[in-house]
Image (cartoon, rainbow, N blue to C red):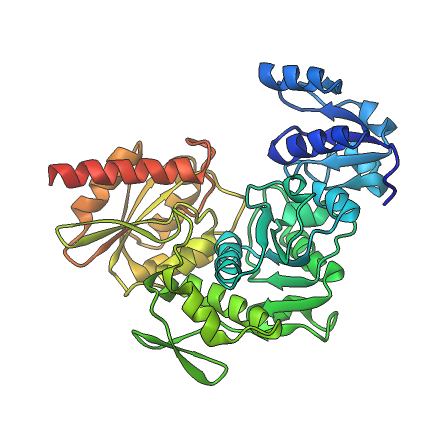
Length: 430
């Protein structure tokens, strides 16, 4: 990509484009910001200080005059203006990484587990003395690492970013899993799958979970597969026919055994011994709101899995528990998913379901038709107290919402934190 003075139009002024704007201005490029919502007064002042023109409360055809259009991940494929200029539409990843590649790039995508897996890579490689940064969809914009000299850059990449990306210099691409998700953004599941698989068009080496084989078919014959690992016993795990100690309890969930398999497979291909990797992970702590034990009250375990924002993620969470031992809290805004598979698992795994939020209208008819016992409540406080009332000693009260948080909360973290506060208040009064 040419690095002489260019004209960039940034559609959306969120975290990633805000960092990119500053970088482009410092490099001497001309920038125009177009935001569909109202810009804050602080953003307006910052743009004025950088001498950046902008518009808000809507995107206009002014963006079409730019040499390159850089979209925020939220911009949908059918955007009325951007869809007319696909040939010059990029992501911040395209722009930054084609100006300066900071190190060996491992890119991770998948329906579930991306963030945890990226942090596992970071934890291991840091402990092994490597210079590493995690960036991308994880919340650290790629523009922040432009001037870094790294051994490894680990990228979390969403289906939205992959759809819009043109050319990414990725050394290793990892697809953890592909299940229906974000069907409120993608026009179809097939479109979502193609966006995920686009990672392999950029990657030098390709890795995927064996469950993705049905999507990959014969397009790539060199994909290295990995399977979800299984515990030999409470303290040991098998990998490629060898038995290794697994001392970290966080890694023994169904989800993290899959993430661990991906990390071990990739790092072994890069010359790192599995035993060394597992030793480095002994003190690893996953990010919050992912199968996080909050409290044990009267022998009832309260688990925060607020990050499970799809039906597939909640199904995976339920696989960690014995049949009939879970009181499940469902809440949030659906993503145009089919919930039949989830309800099938609920019939097997849960003893009771508590529901609130927008998902209520979608899920309760299915629960009723399948004879899954449930109750609709108004808010998180009612949900936690009702779930505790329905639980017996040895049961799990699981917040695994199967939906996005945006009906009632700013994000999944805020929702999880609310759950934690309510559980703690319950514990104080127990």
